[in-house]
Length: 294
Image 1 (tube, rainbow, N blue to C red):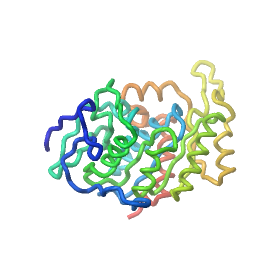
Image 2 (cartoon, rainbow, N blue to C red; image 1 turned 180 degrees about the vertical axis):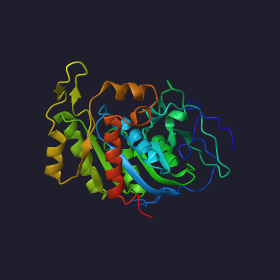
Image 3 (cartoon, helix red, strand yellow; image 1 turned 30 degrees about the horizontal axis):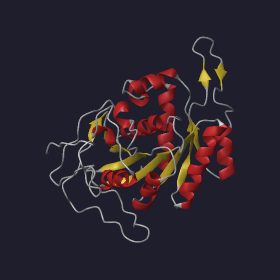
């Protein structure tokens, strides 16, 4: 393994924004749509998307990856948000990744899950002040220049929106499916529908929708309240667009606390109902993509 010296402040070429030694594994841009490629040494790849920020997508993505690992699978997560990476905080990881003998980035691991994120390559408070071309090239390197060492499942944590990052991912790699996350409120669902239409236009199978922050139960009086609107918001959207409803994640202060402390719910409270909700969703996703076969 080799140490790396990375800085977003130095002058980096557009073709190689992460400053990796040349390996020749990323094809240069050609006319027309690029050919989709499998992520090397990875059996299954799913994308977790919301098209809306602030709905808890990254927390769900990490807990799903942990749920797969808890089942004994070789699990990994790739944080594709170049500007606002969350995975380092959620997995309590830091430090610059080293290089493998073939000059690829080596993932950082915790709780049995391998991970890669732009957050490992820059300081915690350092902004990534890049234009679109640099961002897309960096994303290509994260997609194709990481030595995962063999995974059963790789979870992609997508940033909000339906722009360049999402198109690059859907056009350049083989995805086994996408999971859409939304809260019950209409303002989140409207953006979630945009994500649904994007995946359909790019011919990516949609595995279903997850309703996050669905119900809050008061710890003092045990009364339950739908803080973010009707409990049927996401289920109605699933019926309207012909999608599977994968399940509810409750609104609970421990989920946020666990995430901030870098010890997500599936790890910190594996026997809680909250953790079981993540595990059930992971099981259903695994069945849909035939993860548990072979």
